[in-house]
Length: 160
Image (cartoon, rainbow, N blue to C red; front, side):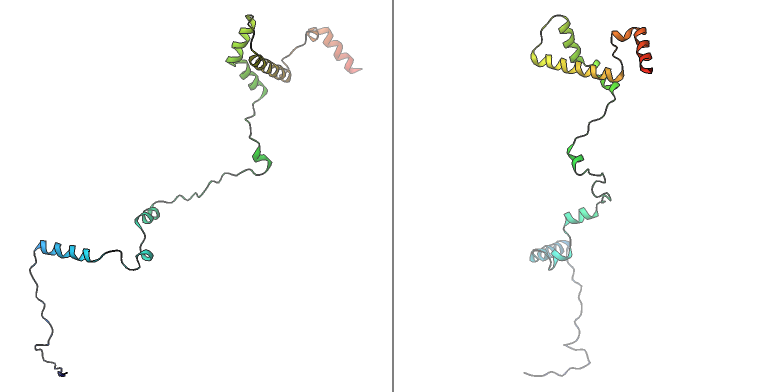
């Protein structure tokens, strides 16, 4: 193998001259497509370095600062019992008096019709509840206590 001595003069082994080639647009597009066909798959390390589009979309969206509910959760025996909306006796009595089904059944009883056992039980239950509520509110009056004299006598007897 022969050895060539390097010189500082430019010659046949000197720096190559850059020649600008005139390429048409179609040639450039063809070369780009050929490069893309050569490169198959993803770049090396792509699963570690770049996020997928779905992850990037999720992370770029606004996140809600409220994570989870702040509502207190009842624990123990309180959690097992469903709470009813407490109505006052006056409200409950008003609701029962305006019950359309009860009114229709009472009208049928007044007309002399006989109800089935289920309907009769429903009417009895509602009437009993109305009676209890009226006692609580002091709306029931006994026939014996209507007389003022009897009331006065009861009052006087309490003092003794």
